[in-house]
Length: 254
Image (cartoon, rainbow, N blue to C red; front, side):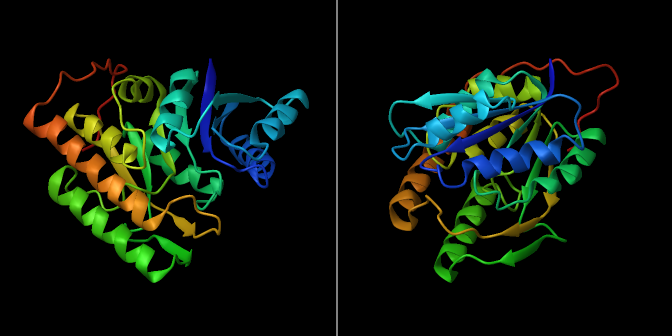
């Protein structure tokens, strides 16, 4: 059993994925005894898979999962989490917009009793070192306000890609998810809240990194449609929730 599994969705990341994997392993080794990295190549056409395969042949604890076509971030996360074997599961974007060193803050909240610790660019104490373009920032804030109004009141930033889960809870939650696109973050957190799991929002340092795969208009429209579908499924016709067995003495924070 691994102490920590790190899941990295990747689409056309051949240029930086090797550095990302090495940075992740270097940092998490300070915090966790036995770690694995799972890179999910989501239909890349630029040699991402070849780079990751080379890292594995070099002896790094990294596994490659591949989609034959680009299915979306949510689909990539589901695939990676399903194959994870860690007591904890960390999700991180390939661009490391949230530095891996911020894992210490998230681990602290898990140690305090939370089931899920999510990095936040909006929580008090967060620091943004490099901003996105103004229109992209405004659209992100508008989406998060809509999420708070409909599904997750009190959570200010669902879309930061740096999230830490207790392993069994991560695998049970993602097994129930169906959203393939970027609103998958909302879906998994909404399921967690409905199941009574504790979610801690943690302020982090964050920097915009060039090369985002999010298309402002196309993906914005898709995320709106996905959000509407999640709201319908979770409020109008809620399905049975996954069952969780808490460790003795564990009390989730709300």
